[in-house]
Every structure is written in C-alpha cells, then in structure tokens.
Image (cartoon, rainbow, N blue to C red):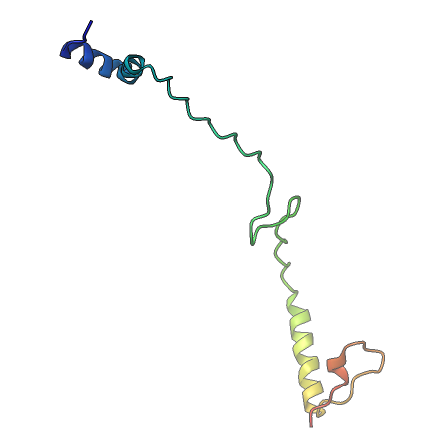
Length: 100
C-alpha cells in the first residue's frame, strides 16, 4: 500500500516520516545520540578571588590627629638634625642608611 501525499504530510508533522521510510528499505532505526554525562561540579578558584573562608580586610581605623602631628614634628626634627644615625636596636635597614 503506497502512502498518498496527505499521509506523508501527516507523518512529517508527527515526526514519523523517517521511521516510515526506514521501514520500507529494511534499514534499522538510527540510534539516538547519547547525551554527554554532566561534568561533576568541582570548586575551582577564580583568578583574583578571595580564597574560601576568607574575606577582604576591614578598612584601617582613622589615625588620631595628635599622632599625626607628633609624627610630623618628629620627622621635621630628624630632618633638621641632618638625619642622624638611627638606634642600633632598630631592625630596619633603612634606619641605618644615612643620606650622603
């Protein structure tokens, strides 16, 4: 029995035309494509992101006004004294270097 154009149009609309044509030729049905297995979710660090469990540092508290003025006064006195050598107890390398 041959299919008329209305039958072919109906099979095409339902998506069965390929199956019908394969049945006429004796070829097996095409295998359905395998769906790829989903990748497991692995936590990966992003460049520039904070590590897990960490947070950005809090902003520094404002410095007291008298500490700023005392620091400036100490620096001016040190500069006026032609930068005398620092104490030998200071672990800082910059303190022991003198301006020439």
